Amino acid sequence: MRVRTLSRFRAGLYGWLFTIWLMGLGFPALAAAPQAPRSEPEPFPLLKEERLGTLRIGLGEKEVQAQIPGKLHKGKEEFWAATGDYVQEWKYPDCGLSLNMASAKRGGAKTVMSITIQAPSPLKTKRGMGIGSTLEEVAAAYGPDQDKEISQNGEIFVAGSIYGGLIFTFRNGRVTRIFLGAGAE
Image 1: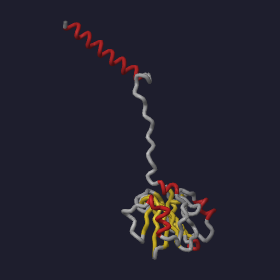
Image 2 (image 1 turned 120 degrees about the vertical axis):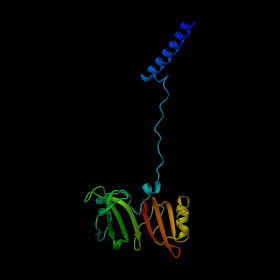
Image 3 (image 1 turned 180 degrees about the vertical axis):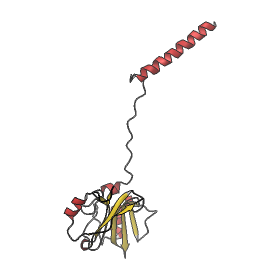
Image 4 (image 1 turned 135 degrees about the horizontal axis):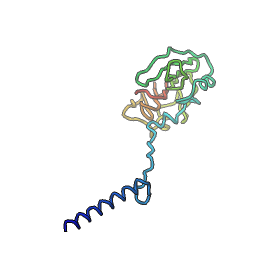
């Protein structure tokens, strides 16, 4: 009787080993269906989608210089440990525009890291907001994207997040400054 039990055990074991071996050869009927890779949602969609005029995050330095008239004042290039980038401020005071331009290495090709506008900038967001827009207009355009925890009623309206989005600054109910980028790391 003991021999029969041992034989049945071996037969069962060999059956399982054979099944595992078949799965290893890639027989789809026996193997579990492979799972499709999960696509993660964009953590800061406004950062990727939004524009100020034709300027956007990630735009190269040659495209920036081709699009912006006026005198450029370049600041000193500094290493930002929080991002690991070398960052240089580019100011166009006649246009009310300031850009933080980043590169992976000192003196390397730069791309737009953040954009700030103030008067006399004529630039507008994709949803038509610019310097002088009212708080009500901004709320109507960006209300669903508002970060209510960070926004300060009547003073600061954050659309998206301070880690990636738009920050509108107000005085007397009107926009005085717009920032597009990551305000915090």
